Image (cartoon, rainbow, N blue to C red; front, side, top):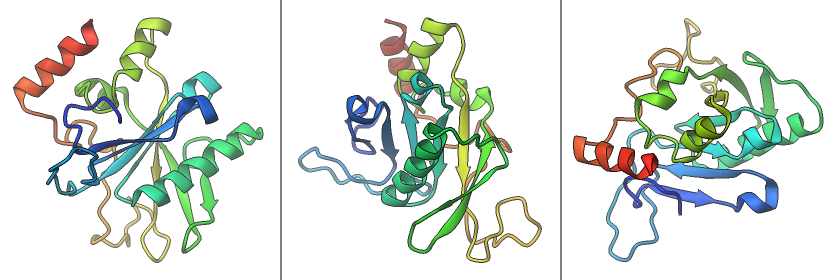
Length: 188
């Protein structure tokens, strides 16, 4: 399980030793604790850690189910590992059901640094080791007509936060006590 301020809403998916990276799903309401009644958050999301060690940007994807998130992330990682250059703005078609494009977008460092609980201790460790945060990219997905957020005709009922537009608001940070406890854990 991922180190997260609320273990009921974070789930670690896959060992980093096998593929060189891991995917953490947050907000899906699934937990392994007996008696857990934590429901899903309004905008569940997934993120990677360990891709920077492979020379790739870390990835974050909002609002889709964990299986689709894992497929999209896996496809992007595999294509980059095979030498393909995928820069922000690039569209990547993923064999999900249905097949759909995904688009890469930059994530501002403000999003990562605003709340240290967002993407676990990996990023703080990376900053201490290398002196900088790793590059993070968001994987955006389109509405049913393949229009991405920001398009003038994008379906407004398809809600996914675009981190470059608002790096502070999503996800909602924990309360003061949770934020302080997280800072103490990562300062050690």
